[in-house]
Length: 247
Ligand code: URA
Image (cartoon, rainbow, N blue to C red; front, top):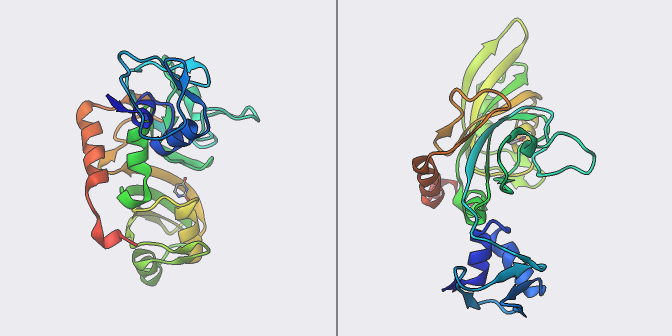
């Protein structure tokens, strides 16, 4: 027997917190009876559990890595009909959703899953999973700018936590530089805003690592399944406490 919200989250309905809200809103039934209080337990192998009248099944858990191209929305669908990340998963029938977001114009490593608990674990602000980007910026930031990024810069939603920053490539002819930056938070457009705060506009942004997981040879617009070991390593990264990065 498991708590209902846990069963729903594991079945990929939504995060555990969202599932609690669904239960409280009266959307969930167990063997035809509406359950609106939290703490009720059920056995998914025996009980018929439904959300808005649709029976959930113990779906196979999927963990995917996509090398997202720019010009693609990190969403399962877009009312305006633009390309979405799930358009790039041929053969995947299960309903998977992205773990966190990449901007429309950001490329690179995006994890998708139907395991709500896993998604929640990796995106929860208290877990500080590192994410590494290659940010190509206008101009060549010098020591003080990089130091500021390392220590934390003031954004309109508060100071950023310490980051790791190093030069990846400098093109003096084009007056551009590519900086590898690792952040431990996941605020909206954070990397772009951090560079803007130190006077450098980001002209290209690519996520190259999530935790210790790297894109490696995965081609642009291509996806692959994560190995069970990679999934375990990501979970371990989320559980590790990065005290230094705590607010
Ligand atoms: N930071 C950004 O500015 N954009 C992203 O897509 C991810 C991190």
